[in-house]
Image 1 (cartoon, one colour):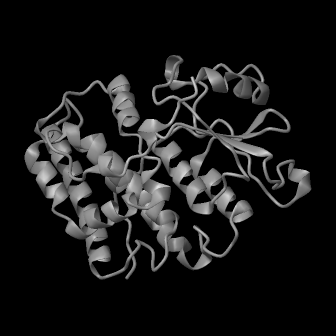
Image 2: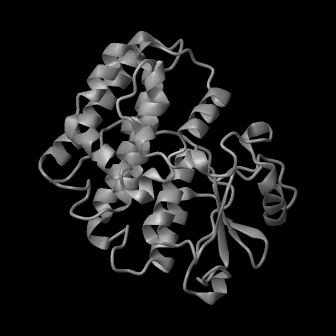
Length: 295
């Protein structure tokens, strides 16, 4: 059974500042060498959390070191002071914010990429052992469909459904998109498929799980109780999220305090009735609270 992306309105986003790739061709300058590259991540950020989970699933601690950043950026514009030298070395007269995530090259002291999907694919393709790839060719269409579903049907729809001051009709339409998306995913998992793209964990599971984490810990607090009850009424989907949270590669990176602090530092909206009770007890599996932050 395949998942068809919901026909949600595409999001518009600013293109990543730097988007190099790791490749086999030495002429690219970024050929794969163990311990040459370093990740700079905040797991309070959805993209940082996705990369951290990917890194752990691939078992890359000894191949690609990780520097964990503070949950709340310490510079104007959402940047991190620790990343400023990398940005300045990589882009002449760079004046924008030094944003995470970043994949850097320790040999040159420059940034390879700030684009999370490319980073995740390159880690899997060039540093995974190949026995259980997170981007198997057979599942490529499914993974891409789930990526679009998460971006448009979950993340964007949940944001719009809880947007303060928005037209109630617009908010209701966004909630319908969100519920339609969750319903499709719930039916997929209710069929007995253990993971969203088949019988093994793939990047699709990383994408979806992180979207569900932020749906419950961030977006939920701006929705009314009725909307939250309808969101929670997808038993197969939330059982799947709970099961993945118990997996050490997923739950160990949950920094619930960091997610809350990052949200409160950025959010201008008001809490609604949905803020009262979380759908899942994420704290039962969270491991990020004990991680020392690099400041």
